[in-house]
Length: 379
Ligand SMILES: Cc1ncc(COP(=O)(O)O)c(C=O)c1O
Image (cartoon, rainbow, N blue to C red):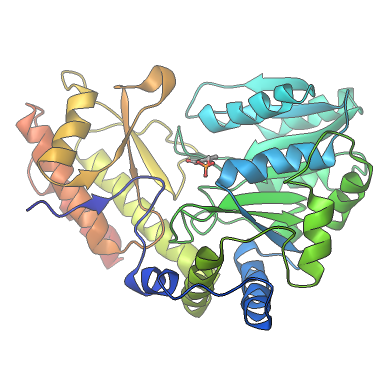
């Protein structure tokens, strides 16, 4: 028997209560019963997004809401700015280019972020830039971008919107959408919301709604004008993922009972503990300056095969972690502390990493990482 511990940055573990909610008998979506649930879910998403604006829900993975935010706000020939800090910010470029949008990009080495002054400089020099597409937690590098600072730069520019991919960041890294001037914040169900995959979300500011009015890029299923119109009536244009909406009702109840700031504080402690443990074992984080509270990216030490490290953790200890992506394949490993996670999930993962590294010939004192994490928990 090998018990499985899902420590990947999505999908994340789903609590029993949520799974049981999902398995209830199907209800029809054009009913008062569904409408009441959908309204409650829409209301209860707001504190998680820290917004008073509508938060739309779609039956797709997070990328559907990323694509939706491009095709609903822009028109052919528009120009956008994309800070590239890893694989998922590259996705913004791919989506924009697929629709013929002109992309100006600024790229940094994975593990770093694009400084706010660089964004300001680009916007000052090029007033035609219609949107900045960025990422809260860049999952591939385990970094968190300075969204608040980006917001300060973009907030008062009427011709530019700030769009944030918070797919892995929501519920782990703080994002105060209204306060910081985020116009569209997209997310997905299978991360901090402790849900199975299948739902995408997008909060939409008044400024973004102005852009939506004038956008002429092609769209059909992800037409947000239709989605917003239905949303006002606690409805969706097409058949919603009814079971997932019912499960989401339960997930949001759990998260709002804990309180979003407590949820964020829990993630902050878990991330601190993971980072302290890795450092105490002599390992180096990919990002020492901008580490996210979603996932910790760690450099594979010399002499250790990164692919084997991941395989041993999986096959021998049941710990599912993520490896490096693209050019960092085999060079880093990524352990998530996201969603339905507590101290002992993190301790279990750290202990298994110690055992695995030792087994692969890396010199580590057993218990050193666990002790470092426990010391964080004691504070
Ligand atoms: C930051 C980020 N953006 C986008 C995605 C893609 O989301 P999905 O697979 O739900 O479409 C992910 C998924 O890992 C992510 O972490």
